[in-house]
Image (cartoon, rainbow, N blue to C red; front, side, top):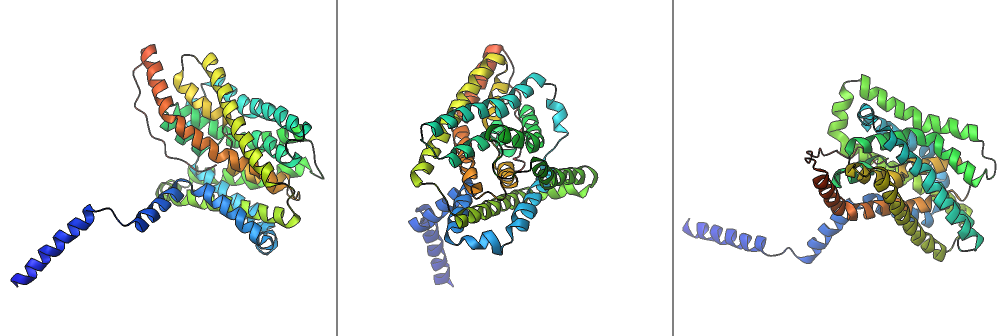
Length: 379
């Protein structure tokens, strides 16, 4: 019995030693990979879906019946989930900031799109960028603000949460009409686009599911518990729906033949980053002039003025340009803009927190307890 207990203590001391030592590099590497994927799962999945589409386009162009599965089922599922998650009663809290709300929506829809429109036409005029990518930049600039990303970044930067919720929900509800209007005003009707049919399609695919989700949330009691319990899974379902839509769009694009070079794509990526930083700088200057004594609003406005939603963006492009072989190319500038706004926003968050604290100290305000908002959905 004695020897057994000695062996046991030896084993336990060996285990303790092993725990103190670093885990072997393969397991460290895999855990780092896992963490990296978790942090950037949407971007990685989107890139992977585009590569898969390139490998064998007919799968997503025909065999998976994208006309039903991608353009209808996936889009409607995404927006039912958004409807379940968006809390519209919070709109009333923030609606008293009317001047701020109007400025933010005007800047996001009109100022950003005008800047990009002028810039992209210059690029076409000097033959610097192909028409399809330049048009994609314009389409991206006409989109409304994100829903979850703006809440996450506003909260982590100590901005005004209620104002962020209003901007996000208002954008999600108006984008269905405003974006097609702006796109067709700027780029004009290419091919046989029937604007009335586009609006009807978007109403059925986007607004109807949003409404169904909202009604379930309001009038069917178990819904709220279900959403609270499965919020992470619901967000995952939305992401996979979006990735599937992008996959099908690119299968169609690769099958009909892609008319753009790698150089053009890299150039467009660089230009999108320059444009994003420029409109953020412009928005910040305007906000500091108009809302000088409202540091929290300035922080929220910085994100609300310049962010663009990918989960409404891709279905919108798909609905407007359903039969256009360039539909995939039109989504590329947005696929660049979307992760960049998160990268830049996250990098700025600590500086913005410091800015708010400094300004509120100068204005002699007591810091409010920041209430953490959960990221609602990826729209």
